[in-house]
Image (cartoon, rainbow, N blue to C red; front, side, top):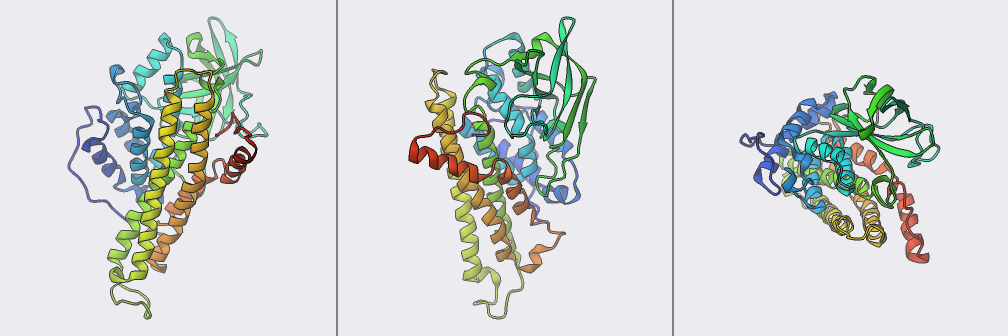
Length: 406
């Protein structure tokens, strides 16, 4: 299995600075043992503890509030590097960063300030929104409910695909009250009545903790329950664009990891076919061409994600929340990026074996994880629906679906 060269120790007692060498040193450390963790299904609690101490979960929190003050483009640049180091760890943090985006877009309040302060101090937030009882993925009407209990509420229900919550300090839960009004709460995962079940058994992204979460008579304080508002948070059009582009950034990181491993394979490869044009594989122009294609795929994937991230920065900073045009533009850019980047990552995962030969398929090397992980990520909100929606917009001016993962 590929093991990155160790770098000197870094100080996690200080916040990680955007673009600093500290950040890359952290990612290099995370990359050590990544293939073994995935192969042996070792849940990365220690890595998440390190991330918590480094406080990189606060990269988007303003500097004045103790965060990194990064743009979306800067954040996703870091996410690509993190996914290159460990795609599972990057995915574990997807919902955390998505919740932070909602906190940044929400009206100021004492409760909002507390959640943001906790993130700035290192807290990680998971997510519990999906319910299998919904016939349409992305349907926001939950069966999970809150009922009045004195000056607060009691929460009951079951959620699935709770990515990252297994490792988190808080979990965001989508609920409905007795009048079917939709709301969100963020509560500590260790609160009495919450059960986290590690039952995700996908072929890829095996360590993300994307399992089941049960809520049984869980206490929710009144200040912890935020009801939907027009154009804010879950009430806003295209409010899941960031979450979708984040997944695409992970696939761009996987493409970069494939380049790393393909280059290493060819450099180390001792045998080739008798009809190969050169005796030494590293001098074989056919293998060089394969690695060159993988390198080009990785470059194009990252550039595409960052171009879409710039559109999302424009949308995030739009002064008029009533104007949905910037949000639509960023959703279009994100959807187009997904179609291209998913294909590049999956294709590179297959080309890796052209560079390494049959011996590269050994289970002990676990190189198939790149293809499995990229394919699993691509299966979230398939490209076929994205391509159709983009085509309808280009031909007929039909807006993209405002809800769901656009």
